Image (cartoon, rainbow, N blue to C red):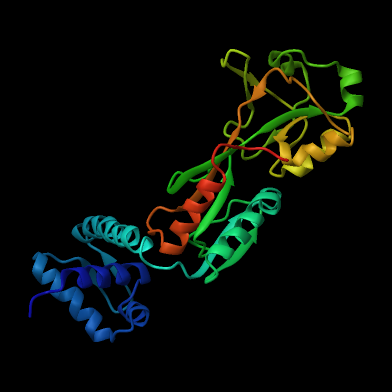
Length: 302
């Protein structure tokens, strides 16, 4: 019987990922002997040993390591190709496990999820709202919606929109320290910094002619939560640069005042992020496409 190379590759990868033939067999719903036989047949076909086998553990040979890495990419490409085709013919269904920040999730992602479920009622969502950067693979998540810095270069990200920023401070702070007239004036002010900004201590503005102005800023507060930075700024101790949906209520109440209006801060990009070695299922691909269409352009609070 001819070797089913695709199945053999899948079995080999599962054995390496699970670290044993028995655990791979459980994952694949096969017998341990069948799993061992598939790997042995693959080694015979390739005329090389892929695994070192002992009674305690298995490990990759040099050839096995090279074959494993190439096979991972090949299987991912096959799954991606199938997903592209199936997404246009299969009705999305199942559960999407995703993470996002609460500050973005409540005003923007929640309504988007509701609208998506009206269109695709067979899709469920399991949402972990958090400002921390979670490990998507380790926590079994399909997707993350992130603003600004992605945090991990090994992830694949699709830009689905951008978020308008506002520079602002409390009236008491401005009365004491003066109103900045130009972005360069910020070097003399207490500017709060955000953990997931594209560049931690750099704020970028666009002038009336479209030119970019970059300013190095320093401040007494650094945080991974925009609401916290805005609240501290409202207490009158410094300047914050935050998405408008966070600071607009504080500006409307007079607790904060927008500054440098002639110079628009460069917006933060919004990304849909997913693990690089997992294909996008029909449900995830359809949802990401939906978000990209919904968030096209620059989001601004109403």
